[in-house]
Image (cartoon, rainbow, N blue to C red; front, top):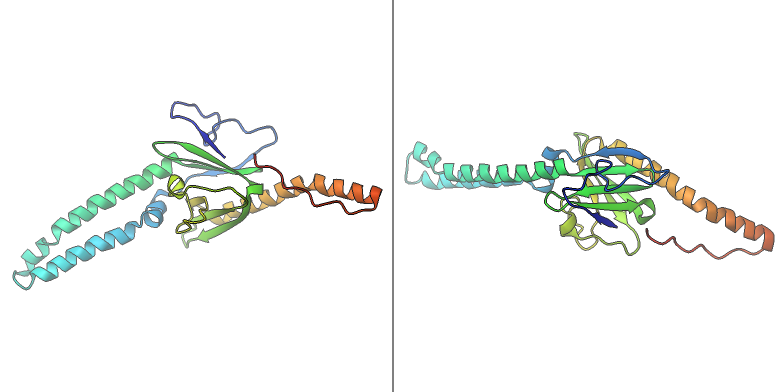
Length: 226
């Protein structure tokens, strides 16, 4: 399911560790929006509000003993600390965004993630049971992939490219991507086409057996995972 490669490896196609096989076509590639990623995955606004609250609380507490100007100065250390923390979180979000490449082809969804240790996850459409779209007013959104069968993900290894709060049953996700609704439509159409193409030989074989033998064939066994 994963392909590991180091930073010195030259990708033949951006976001993929090797050239796509014959017949596979890239339909879309993109990255997370770093600002949306900072707000949603790192709760940047909540962190800012937390330190602003601490500063206000400190100022109010000092007003019982000092003048207004001195009381306001008491909030400065909290505000400075808040700015530092927010700057670090913003840098993390930006780094995650620029090092990530999401790829949608006519056969799979691939996620090249990781700033320090780069990992590529490949999800053929037959592994995906459903895709959940969380769309924002700005047009950015997250597409979470609900996996079927025994396929399992590590929440920590995949974070922040994972559906929030689904820890027991992690769902890899294309986080905070621009024009998410259009990308979801591309994935849905490609998945339907690919699954129908894979099922066609089984249906044809079943029809042939039924016509020749007059008996209903047993259900086809699921295809093994790649």
